[in-house]
Image (cartoon, rainbow, N blue to C red):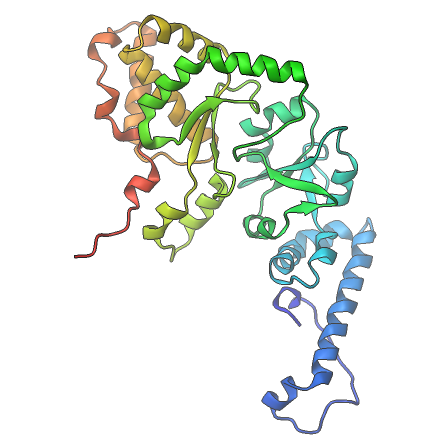
Length: 350
């Protein structure tokens, strides 16, 4: 039996096994391969019957979901069959599991993708900033909360003709009208100066600063490259005891900073950058919302002390205790926005 089915106890009665009891010889006989093939087939049929039983499927899934997902990752022969067993909680059914086929059957007109988000727990992903626009427009989002989901999903590019899309990565495309596209292009021109200003402040911390189509009520978020790690995957890799930190910087995805043009904070920053683009307060604010977005998006800060200093200065300014314009330290003196890659460069060889 393959490793992902090791939870099954199987008793085989066969009259066709050779009398030679040498393990090496026995494992190479054709009859063993036939028995293995039939055992897997029968086991998957039995699992299929359990998954059709409404009373038992939840109990089975809570106990052995990781085994099924491991099978999808390892067993290319039976992958399509195993995918049919997948069940997840979603934004439509946050308290009950539903099959992928049920999600695919509920797609909206013009929707070509199935959307999912991965994270540490359902409580975190269900309140994520990345789900705001999709929930507002009625799109269903699949919640993936087990570490093995990050590995398994790499083997599933699409399901029933629908591409599986991670909503925390760049190039998220939502169905929109020609009027909405035109309006967004106008906003891009309006906010071009602010994007350039924030890019200058953050420097190499981000790959780009662009307007967002995925946000509704939050001012900003951090998205990763389409083919790179998610923030959840980075967390998983860093948590491994024997992880190789020297290669982590090369595997980590590039970060893209997205701002919401409809949020009052962003609109006020646009007005201020046109009046005084050299304002220390505005530079501090740019770094502060970036660091806050890092935390909201599931990343960790490289310099928490610098972040705390900025927060205290903004609180001090809000209380009117000091003149922030005079006492604020230049953002260049605080390395809070450095990327994890800066700390994980490979050691030089003499």
